[in-house]
Each structure stands twice: as structure tokens, then as C-alpha cells.
Length: 399
Image 1 (cartoon, one colour):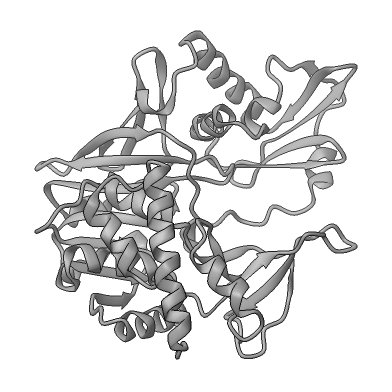
Image 2: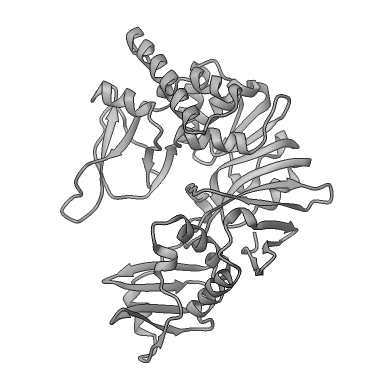
């Protein structure tokens, strides 16, 4: 992508401003990563992206407006150096940025992650000179470029499941002078040709730690990834790999979400009304409100991950103020309805889904509502458990 000289000058100014603001916010403490942010031209990696319009459409869907240098140069350049995630693809459809069109709704499937989170992930992985790194999820290539600037291209391998995305990222990387090892590959299986590595950092989320990742990390090496699931509960974990193939490490604080690995995306579950039709007519009072895990708070974000461990195959949707939980694996279902300020629950199937959720919520309250950083994940082969000294052990789904 050819950019006028005056734009490059403005981009350099915006990079300096971005680095300064991230430093002041506490997101960029390491001078080496700060210099990388000052150096890497993010605008080269996002020739086009989508930003949400101020108003939804007549169906209530978010309208995503395309942004390119040709459409609105100032808006494009300013957004490229904002601390924001820039959506570059929906539903796996590669846009034609020469003739872009607005999107109505849709599921984001690729993006350029907000810079503060990118540098936070690299810094949290405890990366220093001499380390070899495997990045899972090249995306736009911006985070890959930062790693190359920090460590040198020879130390960086980055894989991406979407070949078209990787082709675009590779062109931008090479155009900027970065030459990491790149490959089209599924992050679930890592990348054996470059194994073993010192660090693995994932820019996508997994339901459990893929065994290939621990096998491809040197003893004493570290894996930083995000765990998530079909309830969209998230937790970041920093694992240290032991010589015997096991791994363990703490959950990290803060709220972070990444797109799921594509092969682990939640399955379609049909019409909630069909599931509700099989529920009993009688209900019981719910011990906990579903708002405990749906509220827009850090605690609810954390609780959604913990409860997800207890019901790993469950999805949740709210329709006409009724909260539905469905499990496509076992056929279990539950619905919660508020009546006179109190929640009532109806359940059916082999497992009482809301009972399991309430068990976790009650244990969490009894333990004094511990934060994410007080939990540890232990990986022993196919067994993966989340531990807290004052709560029952929680298990992740088998990888």
C-alpha cells in the first residue's frame, strides 16, 4: 500500500502519541516494547476496517461502516493509531477494500487487536532477547511486526488459519522489512516444524489448553493464552511447562476477550422456544440471579468463566426477558424468568444446568469472592483443572 510522504509524517506523530498515551496508562512500561510501538507503522497493516455507526438499522443490528484511506483519509489514519480493536473481517468473508460496503450485524472473524492489549500480551509472556516465539493468530500482522521489531524476525513464527488473512499480513510485513516464519496452520496444533520454542502467545481463545502447545514448548518455557467457551466466559492464563509434560500457572487479572479458534466456535442450537417446550410447567425459586453472570462488570466476567467450567457445553441466550440455557451435547435445558422481582427456574434433561451454575456461585460467595489472580490452572495430560484453596476444583473440557 503506497502512502503519501505527508501521511507517513503524520503517522509517525500519531505513533509517538500512541506510545506516550499507552505509557501514561501503564500499558507500556518496558522501554523496548515502547520503542517497538514508536517504530511499527500500524496503518500499513490495516488498509481497511470497520467501525460501528452511531445508529443501528431498522432491525436493531449494528451497522458497520467501512473505513479506508480512499473513503476518509483522516478518519482512517486516526483510527489506525487509536487504542481500539479494528474489525477487518466478518463471518469469514474477505472484504473488497477497493469497493467496500457497509455490514449489518455479523460475527467478527478477524481483527487488528487494540495496541494496549497486544503489548500487554507480549509483556505478560515474559519475553526477552534470545527467546524464540510462536504466535497463534497472525491476524493483520501488526502484533507480529511488534515482536519482530523487539526480538528480530528470525526469532518469530506466526501462524494463521485463514490463508487469505495471512497473505495480506505477509505482504504488509515484508513491505515493512519484517521476515518472520509464517504458515497457514490451525493454532490447536501449534507448528511442529519450529518446535521447540521458548514462548507461545495466542491471539485467539481455546476451550482448553491444546496438548500440542505444551509438547512444543521447551521445559521452563511459557504459554500465554486465553481460555473461553460457549458461554463466552474468558480467563487469561500464563503456564510454565515442566520437563515431564505437565504445566501450571496463574490466571491473570483484568478483562480480556479474544475470538475463539474457528474450529472451536459454538455450534448452532436452534430455536430457544423449541428447547423451552420440553421444560416442566413447575418452577422453583432460583438461588442466584442470572444477572450474576450477565452483568457488565469485571466480577460477572470472571464468574461467567468459572460457571462455564461447570457447564462447558452450555450456551445462553435471552429472548423476551427469559434467559435460556441449552446444552446441545446432553440435551439438557433451563429457563429463568423474573416474577415479582424474583427469578424462577425450570430445568430438564440429564443434568440440572442451573443447579450446577448455582453450586459454583455459592462456593464463590463462601470463599469470599476471590479474584482471577487467586486461581491456578494445572495441566496433566488430558486433565485440566482450575484450583483455588477455598473452592471445589473446576475442570476444563477435555482437549
